[in-house]
Image (spheres, rainbow, N blue to C red):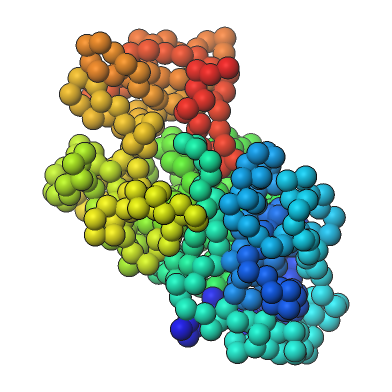
Length: 510
């Protein structure tokens, strides 16, 4: 049985700040009261699984914490999902209820579910951090602490399902990755070690709350540590500067956000000062171009650290806070995570094979998901013998173990002239050129080479786009001649998803 709750700070809540969304906030006492009351409602209703309408609000955070404390698996829903995707997720996960803010208008796809409006406000005394109000909420009949019915999750086995997070569905309908309490706690505790994360840290971010990055790392992470989070609601460089300048110590973002920061730095001295004072800047969900790394470091003296994870694995690697923040890498395996690179026959590539030895990343450890909901076939196919999860990500390793991801096996591995080429390193090289605003690299069939390298470029100045010859010469000199692009497509902008990842399958369509 689970001997430790996911959120120790809620066992004896006090006046310390927990969650801030704009001008709305909850202390730990207030969160214990609000989540405890909702957890009791879920228990009384006999809920077996709940959907959460995951807007970037206090209500979403309270709903997820309440479900975890009640031991009821939660399914975060992306409010921007279309009707077909929502319909599939609801039919697949079969939640008994949907949790939403009182003012949220839910789509027709959720009309068949019972609705519970989440109340994130508490009495003035509790909201201002009164220990009396918080203790009453935490220890009364509605929430009796670690041994009471509303906090039944504290007594559940570590393997019990906590969240069901749906994948992006790029190769078919989204699959529900079942994440256990052990997976969540092991990942967050490994990041505590890697990032020296403590209860004194104040995390700033503006990420959506329906996925691993924004919800598990960005909300549950601070709560597990006993620290606090300030959510921007909507990302802006002004918001980042304001929150970091007034007590924020950590910033989480995706490459699109850091690119906007890098672009704004020359004209926003207050942003430069705020970032310079931050303890840790973390980027994830996609590769951060080296060019943006260098611009931020040059202006602020702070280097962004990258980490690597997936919905199915949570976090696998990271650059450590006490390590070298090497641009272009995602660091080393986190404590408890085993990582190996394998060739096409799934034979392990030796660690001393050199930085040109490209292989698929496979991982195993307590951070892994339990299964794909209702998909035993997909679950079985996802694992190699020995319990190794096939990530589909291709990487190389530096001599000291730092991992460099070069792309996805399905879309970013280009086999040209007998070489295996990762699209990611070519994209980084192209982004070094002043005339390139965005870059993506794909492969296309070639009768001689097998595949040829194709560059998709959004120019910095559409009136003066870079030429193929200039791009090819730069890549050949910077990397190697066989990695140079042989075809150039100019576009206004690259298609991206909510996390800033380039949707390569959409390139050339429409």
